[in-house]
Amino acid sequence: MEVLFEGQLERSNLFSGKEWKRGYAVLRKHPTTGSKVLEFYKDSHWNKNEPKAVCNLLSSYEASYVVGSTKKRFVFELKTVDHTYELGAPSEALRKQWIDKLNSAKDILNDSSIQNIIQTFNVALVDETLVRKHLNGFSGTCQLMVTDSEVIVVAAGQIKIRWKFSTIRRYKSQTETFVIEVGRKAPTGEGEFRFDTVNPIELFDVLDKAVKDRIRAKGIEISTLTPSSDTAPSFPSPPSGVGRMQPPARVASTNTEYSHLDQHMHKPNLATSSTEYDLLFNKDRFQQKRRSEPVIKAPPFDHNARKLTADSQFSNEHAAQANEDEEMYEDMNASLKHHDVIKSSGDQRRPPSSRPLPPPRGVIPADG
Image (cartoon, rainbow, N blue to C red; front, side, top):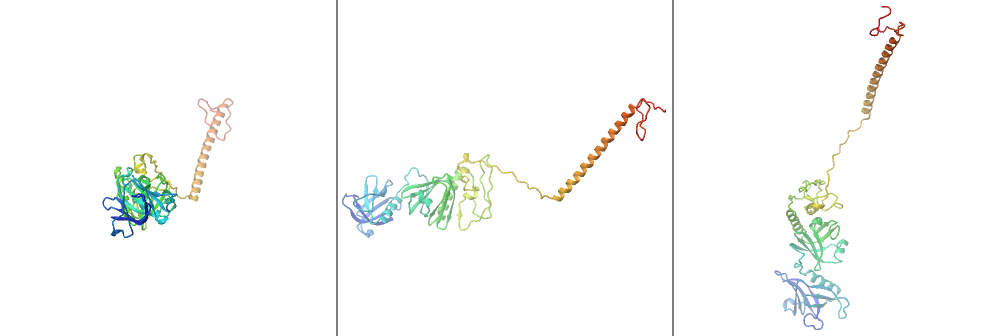
């Protein structure tokens, strides 16, 4: 059986109800069934002796601090379905380790809210305020579970964080570090969470496969791409009535394996836009984006050409106006001369003109 933790412990009322007994405790896990047991021995040479007492740990148990104990210092409780036991550690540090190990070994697979677990990874929290805030100051090793629809963080045997795939913006693996970036709709709020792990690439592959399977289950086809600086990303067909957004130019990544979310679900300005998975899981809330019309640039302005064109246009207009005025003047002069001839026909006087005008129709000249 696998040894999860071991060390000195004092036990009271664990089995016989007698006074405190000092001994050596070993927390073990069965390799096939996964069941846990807490065994008590006389000393640290436990592998050569039979246990003095054995406590089978079922799924419904919890280890917690005891405050105000007058008998012993550094006491904690181990609560099971049938009993509550008091255990004492030699120091505060060991008491904290025992509580963390017992709770982290707690079997939460029977939790009805957790379904279709694909794989569980042991990770260590990076010392950041953002992570500590949501884990209530927990420090140490925790479990990161990947299911077919979400990522779950388990610490001290309790579910601390649940991220649906629709709230994850991106994820990436670095050297001994796995990073998850979530959006504003996540229960933790917007932020980037980092976890130290010995197998970040395997964690990336498992999560990436789960995400792709989830996308295919939604009936959306995706194209498999390998990260490359000269390969343009491929986008799935958007819902009807929604315009396709063009991605920015891809920047080559160095020593980092990014999620395929950026390759086929990229959105500009991730800090203010909705998550990439809104297109997949929240089609009704996806806001329609209209493609802007192309901008046509005007040719360079030539002041000399503009001046010549204006002068030429002014000259043409001036000449046309002069011709029109001259024609109008000639028409008016002819009309006045004609009027004078009709008026002076009674006294046989010629019109005051340098050349004689033809007589009007029906009038006989006086000298004829």
